[in-house]
Image (cartoon, rainbow, N blue to C red; front, side, top):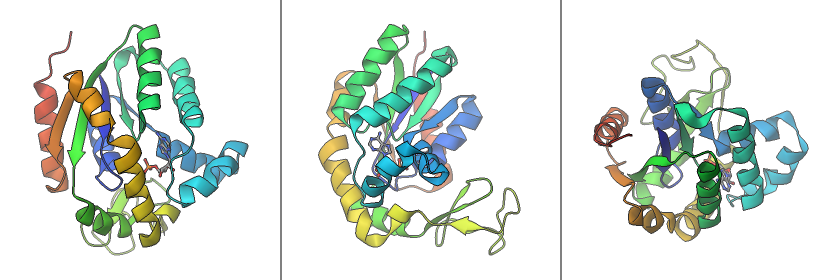
Length: 219
Ligand code: AMP
């Protein structure tokens, strides 16, 4: 199945995409992760997008559409995948439709993670990840079992995202409301939008997602 996770920054798309990809044996494509890797590796692409990402703005449609097009070239999409953080504009959604049409594939479901802005700001500003295995934590909602030690790999080095600073969060939420929210009616009109309550706890959100996905008919 081709699955899209749609929701504001901080809704938990990355966390849930990882769980669903493991549970359903789908690979996860995260444009945010790919762009951060490019910045870390110091590639020309990374240099190009760093300023916009640090400011909480979306990078250009051409760049992210290019990234996804390259992934689709490399991978066989027939086994299915999860898109986390793409599409984020109507132009991206339309480009994705065209790419899938060429491959005779189609989107199985778009999960909308519903969370209010106040909660998002709290979630985002407390986030950090393990440098070694990239697993996400949160100061308040999901601290490691042993302070300073990653539950998954035992790593002891953690990072906080540059764009998770309080002052940048408002810009990211604005970009979501203005540029990404129009995708909700776009997918609703196609009958593939499945809302879940993203305010629930992490396990409960996973359960809701599995429930709505199990009800989707695949052919
Ligand atoms: P994320 O990790 O999904 O929150 O993305 C982090 C940042 O990467 C965003 O604030 C944007 O600057 C950039 N980004 C990721 N995906 C996209 C996309 N589909 N379109 C435009 N910018 C994106």
